[in-house]
Length: 400
Image 1: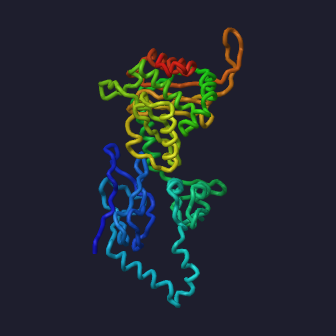
Image 2 (image 1 turned 120 degrees about the vertical axis):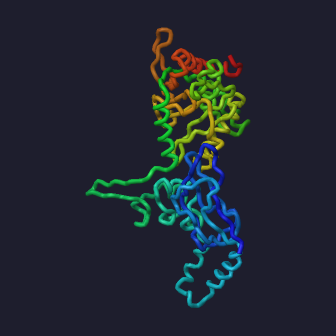
Image 3 (image 1 turned 45 degrees about the vertical axis):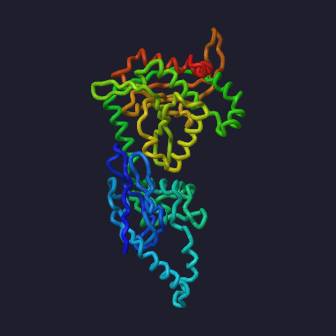
C-alpha cells in the first residue's frame, strides 16, 4: 500500500486560510494522476488541487466548505489500489445479473454531474451541486451557460440552499464567498482608515477616438489585439503619476512610501466578484503590451485562473464603470494604495467651446484620493494632467 496525501497548496503570505469548494470525486473512486480533485477558494483566487498520484481516493479528510491552511492534508490516495480497482470495474460489466444496469453502463464514460471550471465557480456562488444541474456540454458536462441558468428552485431538494417562503415572498439565504467577504472587509477598511476625497473633471474623448479609429485596423493586424480605450487611460495615468509622485505613494504607519515604479491595478469583474490584477511596470509597456495583458486578465478572471501573484501589490488603480454604462461614481481606494481613477461611459454631450455650444463625446473622470498624504492641489493637478494627455494623446508618445 502506497498512500499519497493530498495537501492544500502553498498560499501567499497575505492569505492565511482558504475554503474548500466541492469535491469532484467521492471516497472509494479511482483517480488519475494530476486529475483535479477539488478547488480551493482564497480571498483572491481559486486554486485547483490535482491528484499527486493515480489510485483510489481512500479518504476525504476535510469536507466541502471546510476552512483550511497551507500544507494541510485534505484527502488520501492509495496508489496500489488502482490495479485492483480496474479489474473490478471490468468484471462488473458482463455479469448477467447486472442486466437492469446494463443500459446505464455507457454512463461510466459520461461526464454528467461534472462542471466545467467556469461553471463550477458560478455553481459554488449559488450553492448548487453540479450533480443537480442538467449538463448540455460534451458527455453531459455542466457548461457556464447551464450554471448561469441554474436556480436553487430548479435544483434537487438536497441542494445546500436555504429557502424560506412566506406566501409569495420568497427569501434565500446564501453565505458570502470568501472573496466577497474579503472585498467587503477591505472596502470597510478603506473607508475607516483613509480620509477619502474625490475630485472630478471631464475629458473630450474625440482626439483619442479619432486616433483609435485611424490606426485600429493596422494595430489589430500588427499586434493581434484590438486597440481599446483602457491603454490610453493607463498611459495617461502613468503620465500624471510621474509628475505627482505622491499620488503613486502609499501610507505605512507614520511613513509615506514613494514608489519608483508604476504598478497599475485594473479592476475586472468576474463571476466571483471584483478582482484587481496588476499591470507591472506599466510605464515600460507599449499600447499593445497593455491591451494584450488586459485581455489576458479578462479571460483569466472569467475562468477563475488569476494567480495570487497577479493580484498582489499595485501602486494605483483604475476602475472602468463605463463598460456597464456608469455616468459618474466615487470609487473607493484599494488599500494600501492612496488613489484610484474612476472612468465612466463616453457620451455625446453639449459643451461650450469658444462661446459656442457644440456636441462632443465626453467622459467624466473621478479620482478618489487619501487626503492624509495627498493635498487637493496635487489631486486636482494630477487629474488635469490625465485630462490634458487624453485630449492631446500625441503627447503620450513624446512624454510631454
